[in-house]
Length: 238
View 1 (spheres, helix red, strand yellow):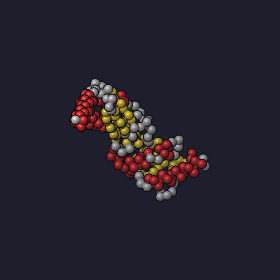
View 2: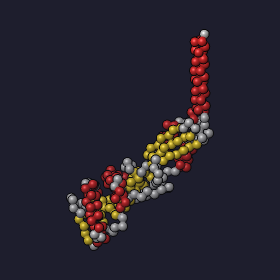
View 3: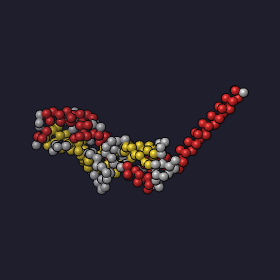
View 4: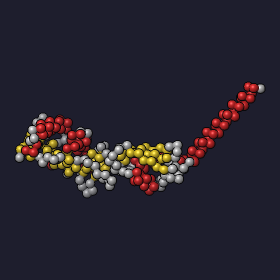
Protein backbone atom coordinates (compact mmCIF):
# COMPACT_ATOMS: atom_id res chain seq x y z
CA UNK A 1 0.00 0.00 0.00
CA UNK A 2 2.89 2.27 0.85
CA UNK A 3 4.46 1.64 -2.57
CA UNK A 4 1.19 2.50 -4.33
CA UNK A 5 0.87 5.71 -2.33
CA UNK A 6 4.40 6.79 -3.31
CA UNK A 7 3.61 5.99 -6.94
CA UNK A 8 0.48 8.19 -6.90
CA UNK A 9 2.43 10.96 -5.14
CA UNK A 10 5.13 10.87 -7.83
CA UNK A 11 2.51 11.12 -10.60
CA UNK A 12 0.92 14.14 -8.89
CA UNK A 13 4.30 15.90 -8.51
CA UNK A 14 5.23 15.26 -12.15
CA UNK A 15 1.84 16.49 -13.30
CA UNK A 16 2.19 19.63 -11.20
CA UNK A 17 5.64 20.34 -12.65
CA UNK A 18 4.35 19.87 -16.20
CA UNK A 19 1.40 22.17 -15.49
CA UNK A 20 3.59 24.90 -13.98
CA UNK A 21 6.07 24.68 -16.85
CA UNK A 22 3.30 24.93 -19.44
CA UNK A 23 1.67 27.79 -17.57
CA UNK A 24 4.98 29.70 -17.36
CA UNK A 25 5.69 29.07 -21.04
CA UNK A 26 2.23 30.28 -22.03
CA UNK A 27 2.59 33.44 -19.93
CA UNK A 28 5.98 34.01 -21.50
CA UNK A 29 4.52 33.71 -25.00
CA UNK A 30 1.76 36.23 -24.38
CA UNK A 31 3.99 38.67 -22.49
CA UNK A 32 4.29 41.95 -24.34
CA UNK A 33 7.62 43.43 -25.32
CA UNK A 34 8.56 46.26 -22.99
CA UNK A 35 11.16 48.23 -24.92
CA UNK A 36 14.01 48.17 -27.43
CA UNK A 37 17.64 48.09 -26.36
CA UNK A 38 20.27 48.83 -29.01
CA UNK A 39 23.90 47.82 -28.53
CA UNK A 40 26.56 49.00 -30.97
CA UNK A 41 29.72 46.91 -31.18
CA UNK A 42 31.83 50.04 -31.68
CA UNK A 43 32.28 52.42 -28.76
CA UNK A 44 32.66 55.48 -30.96
CA UNK A 45 31.91 56.86 -34.42
CA UNK A 46 28.15 56.35 -34.32
CA UNK A 47 26.92 56.75 -37.89
CA UNK A 48 23.55 55.43 -36.71
CA UNK A 49 21.74 56.29 -33.45
CA UNK A 50 19.41 54.25 -31.25
CA UNK A 51 16.65 56.71 -32.09
CA UNK A 52 17.18 56.08 -35.81
CA UNK A 53 16.95 52.31 -35.26
CA UNK A 54 13.66 52.66 -33.41
CA UNK A 55 12.31 55.00 -36.09
CA UNK A 56 13.30 52.52 -38.79
CA UNK A 57 11.31 49.74 -37.12
CA UNK A 58 8.28 51.99 -36.63
CA UNK A 59 8.37 53.01 -40.29
CA UNK A 60 8.24 49.33 -41.18
CA UNK A 61 5.24 48.81 -38.87
CA UNK A 62 7.33 47.06 -36.24
CA UNK A 63 6.62 49.11 -33.12
CA UNK A 64 8.23 47.38 -30.16
CA UNK A 65 6.21 48.41 -27.13
CA UNK A 66 2.96 46.58 -26.35
CA UNK A 67 3.59 43.91 -28.98
CA UNK A 68 3.23 40.25 -28.00
CA UNK A 69 6.47 38.26 -28.09
CA UNK A 70 4.89 35.50 -30.16
CA UNK A 71 3.73 37.96 -32.83
CA UNK A 72 7.12 39.51 -33.55
CA UNK A 73 9.07 38.06 -36.49
CA UNK A 74 12.72 38.30 -35.44
CA UNK A 75 13.95 37.29 -38.90
CA UNK A 76 12.06 40.18 -40.43
CA UNK A 77 13.49 42.59 -37.85
CA UNK A 78 17.03 41.42 -38.65
CA UNK A 79 16.38 41.68 -42.41
CA UNK A 80 15.14 45.27 -42.07
CA UNK A 81 18.14 46.30 -39.99
CA UNK A 82 20.66 44.55 -42.24
CA UNK A 83 19.24 46.38 -45.26
CA UNK A 84 20.04 49.76 -43.67
CA UNK A 85 22.83 51.64 -45.45
CA UNK A 86 24.84 52.18 -42.24
CA UNK A 87 24.63 48.62 -40.87
CA UNK A 88 27.06 45.84 -41.71
CA UNK A 89 25.44 43.19 -39.50
CA UNK A 90 22.58 43.06 -36.97
CA UNK A 91 21.58 40.33 -34.52
CA UNK A 92 18.21 40.40 -32.71
CA UNK A 93 16.90 38.44 -29.72
CA UNK A 94 14.32 38.75 -26.91
CA UNK A 95 15.19 38.50 -23.21
CA UNK A 96 13.02 36.80 -20.59
CA UNK A 97 11.83 40.15 -19.24
CA UNK A 98 10.46 41.14 -22.65
CA UNK A 99 13.26 43.38 -23.92
CA UNK A 100 14.03 43.30 -27.62
CA UNK A 101 17.82 43.55 -27.89
CA UNK A 102 19.70 44.35 -31.08
CA UNK A 103 23.46 44.02 -31.47
CA UNK A 104 24.58 46.16 -34.40
CA UNK A 105 27.91 46.34 -36.21
CA UNK A 106 28.11 49.50 -38.26
CA UNK A 107 29.85 49.75 -41.60
CA UNK A 108 33.31 51.29 -41.31
CA UNK A 109 34.41 53.77 -44.00
CA UNK A 110 38.06 53.88 -45.07
CA UNK A 111 37.89 56.56 -47.80
CA UNK A 112 35.65 59.46 -48.80
CA UNK A 113 35.01 60.00 -52.51
CA UNK A 114 34.42 63.60 -53.53
CA UNK A 115 31.48 64.17 -55.85
CA UNK A 116 27.83 65.15 -56.03
CA UNK A 117 26.87 63.52 -53.84
CA UNK A 118 29.99 62.54 -51.94
CA UNK A 119 30.13 59.06 -50.42
CA UNK A 120 32.40 56.66 -48.56
CA UNK A 121 34.08 53.42 -49.53
CA UNK A 122 33.74 51.02 -46.59
CA UNK A 123 36.20 48.44 -45.31
CA UNK A 124 34.67 45.80 -47.62
CA UNK A 125 35.13 47.97 -50.71
CA UNK A 126 31.45 48.87 -51.04
CA UNK A 127 29.83 52.27 -51.60
CA UNK A 128 28.49 53.79 -48.37
CA UNK A 129 26.49 57.04 -47.96
CA UNK A 130 27.62 59.85 -45.69
CA UNK A 131 26.07 60.02 -42.23
CA UNK A 132 24.31 63.11 -40.80
CA UNK A 133 25.51 62.08 -37.34
CA UNK A 134 29.27 61.70 -37.77
CA UNK A 135 31.96 62.56 -40.31
CA UNK A 136 34.71 59.95 -40.57
CA UNK A 137 38.33 61.01 -40.51
CA UNK A 138 39.47 59.12 -43.61
CA UNK A 139 41.51 60.06 -46.70
CA UNK A 140 39.64 62.10 -49.32
CA UNK A 141 39.64 60.49 -52.78
CA UNK A 142 39.85 62.86 -55.74
CA UNK A 143 39.32 61.92 -59.37
CA UNK A 144 38.00 58.50 -58.34
CA UNK A 145 34.72 57.09 -59.66
CA UNK A 146 32.84 53.88 -58.89
CA UNK A 147 34.53 52.22 -61.85
CA UNK A 148 37.88 52.73 -60.08
CA UNK A 149 36.84 50.96 -56.85
CA UNK A 150 38.64 47.70 -57.57
CA UNK A 151 41.77 49.60 -58.51
CA UNK A 152 41.95 51.96 -55.52
CA UNK A 153 40.58 49.63 -52.84
CA UNK A 154 43.86 47.77 -52.09
CA UNK A 155 45.58 51.14 -51.52
CA UNK A 156 43.05 52.61 -49.09
CA UNK A 157 42.64 49.26 -47.33
CA UNK A 158 46.39 49.13 -46.69
CA UNK A 159 46.42 52.72 -45.45
CA UNK A 160 43.52 52.03 -43.06
CA UNK A 161 45.40 49.07 -41.54
CA UNK A 162 48.57 51.09 -40.81
CA UNK A 163 48.62 53.49 -37.84
CA UNK A 164 51.26 55.82 -39.31
CA UNK A 165 49.56 56.07 -42.70
CA UNK A 166 46.09 56.48 -41.18
CA UNK A 167 47.40 59.40 -39.14
CA UNK A 168 49.29 61.12 -41.95
CA UNK A 169 47.71 60.41 -45.36
CA UNK A 170 44.89 62.95 -45.83
CA UNK A 171 44.06 62.71 -49.55
CA UNK A 172 44.52 60.45 -52.57
CA UNK A 173 44.27 61.77 -56.14
CA UNK A 174 43.93 59.62 -59.26
CA UNK A 175 45.80 61.12 -62.18
CA UNK A 176 45.77 60.14 -65.85
CA UNK A 177 46.86 56.59 -66.57
CA UNK A 178 46.02 55.27 -63.11
CA UNK A 179 48.87 57.15 -61.43
CA UNK A 180 48.17 58.11 -57.81
CA UNK A 181 49.39 61.05 -55.79
CA UNK A 182 49.02 61.31 -52.01
CA UNK A 183 48.82 64.28 -49.67
CA UNK A 184 50.55 64.05 -46.30
CA UNK A 185 49.43 65.91 -43.18
CA UNK A 186 51.36 69.16 -42.51
CA UNK A 187 53.64 68.54 -45.50
CA UNK A 188 53.56 70.66 -48.66
CA UNK A 189 55.50 68.27 -50.93
CA UNK A 190 53.80 66.16 -53.62
CA UNK A 191 54.01 62.42 -52.87
CA UNK A 192 53.83 60.37 -56.05
CA UNK A 193 52.83 56.78 -55.40
CA UNK A 194 52.51 55.76 -59.03
CA UNK A 195 50.41 52.75 -60.02
CA UNK A 196 48.85 50.67 -57.27
CA UNK A 197 51.45 47.94 -57.10
CA UNK A 198 54.17 46.92 -54.60
CA UNK A 199 52.12 48.77 -51.97
CA UNK A 200 53.89 47.47 -48.88
CA UNK A 201 57.35 47.96 -50.39
CA UNK A 202 56.63 51.55 -51.43
CA UNK A 203 55.19 52.53 -48.06
CA UNK A 204 58.05 50.91 -46.16
CA UNK A 205 60.46 52.99 -48.26
CA UNK A 206 58.45 56.12 -47.59
CA UNK A 207 58.29 55.54 -43.83
CA UNK A 208 62.04 54.99 -43.68
CA UNK A 209 62.61 58.20 -45.67
CA UNK A 210 60.11 60.15 -43.56
CA UNK A 211 61.68 59.02 -40.28
CA UNK A 212 65.21 59.99 -41.41
CA UNK A 213 64.16 63.32 -42.95
CA UNK A 214 62.08 64.22 -39.92
CA UNK A 215 64.99 63.47 -37.61
CA UNK A 216 67.27 65.66 -39.76
CA UNK A 217 64.56 68.35 -39.91
CA UNK A 218 64.68 68.56 -43.71
CA UNK A 219 61.13 67.46 -44.67
CA UNK A 220 60.16 71.05 -45.47
CA UNK A 221 63.00 71.36 -48.01
CA UNK A 222 61.34 69.01 -50.52
CA UNK A 223 58.70 69.84 -53.11
CA UNK A 224 58.32 66.33 -54.52
CA UNK A 225 58.84 62.79 -53.22
CA UNK A 226 58.48 59.94 -55.72
CA UNK A 227 57.98 56.27 -54.74
CA UNK A 228 57.62 54.86 -58.24
CA UNK A 229 61.16 53.69 -58.87
CA UNK A 230 62.04 50.30 -57.35
CA UNK A 231 63.48 50.51 -53.86
CA UNK A 232 64.47 54.14 -54.26
CA UNK A 233 62.79 57.24 -52.94
CA UNK A 234 63.49 60.01 -55.44
CA UNK A 235 63.21 63.53 -54.01
CA UNK A 236 63.25 66.98 -55.56
CA UNK A 237 64.20 69.95 -53.41
CA UNK A 238 62.51 73.33 -53.55
